[in-house]
Amino acid sequence: MEKASHLSVIVDLSPTQWHLSAQASNQYPLSIETFLSQLLAFLNAHIASKHENTLVVFGALPGKSVMLYSSTELLTDDMPPLDANSYLPFKLVDSTVVRKIMDELDAIGKLEEEPPCALVGAVTKALCYINRITHHSSTTTGVAEDPTTLHDPRILILSVSPDLSSSYIPIMNAIFSAQKLKVTIDVCKVYGPDTVFLQQAAHLTDGSYIYLERRDALLQNLIMSFLSPPFIRKILAVPKQDKIDFRAACFCHKNIVDVGFVCSVCLSIFCQPLPVCSTCRTKFPINTLKRLNAARPAITPANSRMGVPLANLNNAATPRSTSTPVPNGMSNLR
Image 1: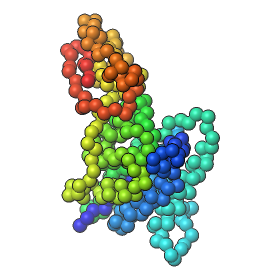
Image 2 (image 1 turned 135 degrees about the horizontal axis):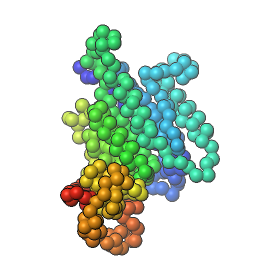
Image 3 (image 1 turned 90 degrees about the horizontal axis):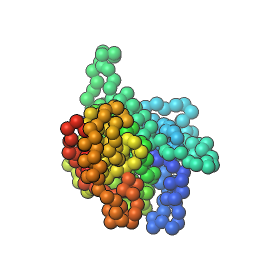
Image 4 (image 1 turned 30 degrees about the vertical axis):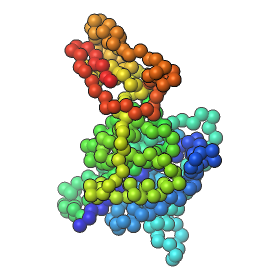
C-alpha cells in the first residue's frame, strides 16, 4: 500500500524580491498574490493525493522564520467559518496561510535596510518538525507503528532571494542533517539568479532543482516536478538539474570562491594562504605558503568576467571541486 507523504514547504517572503518580481519590465512578471493562488492550488493537490498526507508551511521573512500552517497542530483560532460549498481541509489551508502571510508582511512595515531572509532558520525548523513526527518511540506507547502511516518526508523551498555567502556553514550543516534523516530537499527558484547553495542542497539530498524560466507556468512546474513523493519519482521522468555549482564560501571573508585553500587539519576553506588557520590555530610551513602564493592564478578581465572579482560571481557554474593535499600544510582547492 502507498505510504503517506509529508511535505514541508518553505516560502521565501522577501518584500524587496517580490516587489522586483512583480515589475512590469520583467518578461514574465509574478506578483505575490498570483504566486500564493498557484501555491495554494499545489498544497491542496498534495492534501487530496492521500488522506494521511501531512503538510506544514514555513515562511522565511527578513530576520526571522515562522510556521504558517501545520496539518498536525491545528489551533481553534485557525478554524474558518463552516461553508457547505467548500472542502474544509482546502479552506483551512487557504485561509490560514494567506492570513498569516499578510499579518507577517504588515508587521514588517517599511524598513530602511531589509535584513536577509532567514531561509536557513526555516530549513532548520522544518528538519526539527520532520524529526519529531517521524521518530515517535513505540516503546513509550507500547504499540508498534503501522507501516502504512509512516511518512516519506521532503522539503520544498520556493526561493526568490540570492545566495547569502555568510550562511554557507549553516546551510551545509542543514544539508548534512537532512542526509542523516533521509529527507529530500527540492528547490524551485521562482525569481532571481541561480543559488549555489540550494543547488548543492538539492543534489546532495537526491532532490530536484528547478529554475523557473516562465513564471506564468508556476503551477504546472510545481505539480509536474514536486507533487510526486520521492519513492514514486523512481519510475517518473522528473526534471533534474543539468549542471551544479560546487563552489564554497571562504571562512575568512564569507565570499564564494573559485579557487580556495583548505586547512589540512580542520578542512576550513580560505580565499588565500594564511600562516595560521583562524579556526584550529594550526601553523603552516613558510615554504608551503610561498609555493601556494606563487601558484595562485592571476585575475584578468578574461577570467574575472569583465573585471568583476571571482569571489563575487555567485551565479556562474563551475565543475566539481577537487583538492590536492599538501603534507603538513594547506591544500589547494580548485
